Image (cartoon, rainbow, N blue to C red; front, side, top):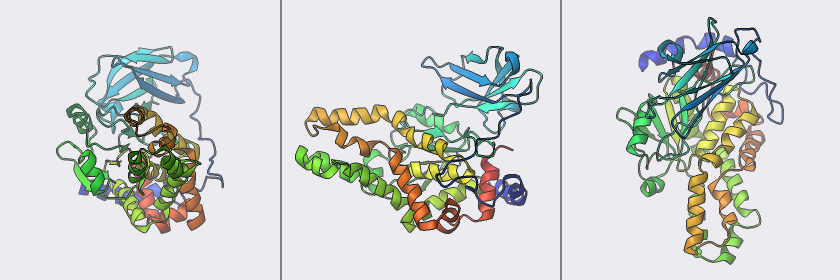
Length: 387
């Protein structure tokens, strides 16, 4: 690990030239938008992009765009995110812009390389969801494009809900990620409720307790009352949404919380391959992911897409929770608690608005709020952005 960190420090100056450390959000307009990413050259041997989706039967459908007249393309699969082309096995060839891959071990995390036959240019892709049983919201933060056309590397940073109920198969899937550490934002009470993270041997468990702002306590207080009038008074008329917006503002203006987010960013910059999680993987984890992606130069629209995806990944859990409350008679109007169990655009808006209000810009927030200096930011980009 020390050798890896030394190497990153040694080339940090070079990375400053390659990626630009004048400001992670320099390309962002006042509204957080960004210029369109630079597109790859549309030569016969180039690809504009690739994606992959997992099928219920264990197959993967890989799709790509940009090959002139659908020339022959080879697809490689590997469990090594850092050298998928060099270690991969060719699993398909196609001229149709897509290929279905079957027979891969479902217990492993797979990375795919799409390469025009005979060409030197290739594109890497992987599923966004990792498929950790018992942790629905485990996702890879790789694959996102930055405002200058670079891509966040797959297999380096993962976001998740609690691993406390990860099954044995889920722990085995985590083992294949090659994690150095998992940073757990949950406080003692949360860990007591759903258990400590179940992690593979050799993965460092780091506790960085960060209060959820009372989200869980608010849900419990409202539902346990069993009183629809009291529940309406507590959560109705936009009160639940306002509560969540204030929680996100606290991520920015609370010094203790900033210190925890800073610790994770510095660990990634140092060379660690990490996952970070909280109970549901949507609020504290959501702001951590939004901070990291914005620091890397990912445009604001993509950051919001990643943030809001928690609603999709957590839908089975959210629906089951609400249905249980209604069935027990404790809750009559499920829409009162739904804002507390998912995420909304206004929650992330509140966090970014607080950044602008307190620090003036996201760059100032990184530097003065989180203590991420230019060298650390350069190392972070070197670690996570394709060259």
